[in-house]
Length: 164
Image 1 (cartoon, rainbow, N blue to C red):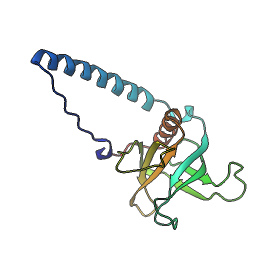
Image 2 (image 1 turned 60 degrees about the vertical axis):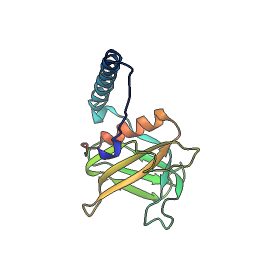
Image 3 (image 1 turned 90 degrees about the horizontal axis):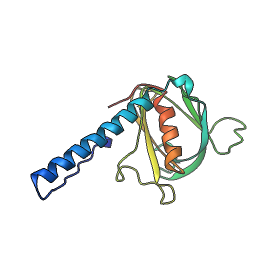
Image 4 (image 1 turned 90 degrees about the vertical axis):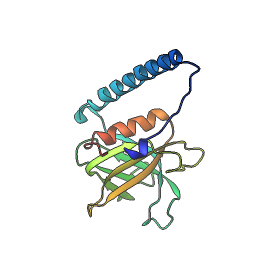
């Protein structure tokens, strides 16, 4: 996806050094791609319900666009899932909101310029899916740490197919 695109330019003192670096990088990329394929092969039914506190960036309907609010999210990974969010962990009453994952759906780590989370929440990720009216929508969230971010992204990806 374009959001994930990055360019890295390296220089080496000789052609031999450049070839060594290229081979090492190619091996590392192959290992990462293999790990990502294994992670994507996890069956959605094998993933448990995920719940926890995340920071959510407000949208144009929230009254305070770009403001970050702490919300309790609950997601049962399956195609066509809805991710509810609440103001409190107790989840009493109606959810504060819900995101229905209309196909296609994807989760990705945004570029730093695309999403500026609060400094205390540096583990931002975005969910991209179709909205009710068929338009693309992107939801910006931030987890407490890298492991939690990966857990949420894996659960979201289990809810549908990737978008590019």
